Image (cartoon, rainbow, N blue to C red; front, side, top):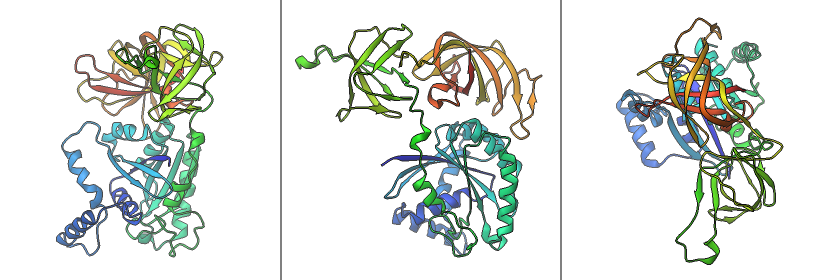
Length: 420
């Protein structure tokens, strides 16, 4: 059974918590004692209905404690698929949190309040999801019950957002009118909106095709660990030398010719091992151990690829960076640590080209720094070559994080726009 990772975004009070609570409740993914506690709290607060937002509201207290990357994760499953929901805060102060939650998502749900229509925050969330190359986007127009399930309201918002999305590189875009409070079009189709002939939200999530979103063309295998069971008494394991890691792209099979970077030496795959035994092929995001036919000096941070399809080997990186630190700013000549796939190196900010206003998409080319939650385009010089692809081609080999040398704190997340 495959896993769909989804991120939710929306302005404050757009009903994200209620929507997630409704998905969990109507898909029977919560325990009886959780439901009893929610019903009891709703009664104590004098509310006339069971407030499903309370199923996720416990996480708000966590946010108030000042956790750095405070994205709340919820897990649930249906007979068709498993789901991981990243509930990301909507406020501009939490841009870094949304970047964290959406960076691994297959799909993003942006909630719009039907009464308020498209807000600045809605546009910002849409831009961030496209910047992070989230392949699928759902615009859930919520609180349709408060506009009497009016088709005209839904169509106006759909039209306005479609016009805005034309400026962005949105892949797959779906519009669904919902009422999270009453459950309309969340798990089951709504009788209140006979004019809507599309799927319910859960039906869309269950049946969305995501296998082709992964890059199955470019073979990328960043080596994480070299396995040498030296003390094994098993004679078969005596000469065992395996290279463990997670496939970041392409399909690997025994007898395939592969190249090792940085050496440029070629060999063939002898065997592919997993925790459950050997397999005939490996593809993203499987974690496997490769055994090769020839002895090559390979260590953590190296890359295995195809001889005629290799990543850029470069020390100069052009990237969009979201700055995540309130302790320090990103400035030209600043020194940091970069972690890219399994390779860690030191880097210097060569140039800050512009700061991007995520609300208007205006480029401030006179910017001399990036502060907390700001996004800008930079050039980095790395002390050793990285094996990188453009982020739009491969999110695994095109993304990286920046770390403060002194505190070891993650201070930025980056997307490679062009490696040279």
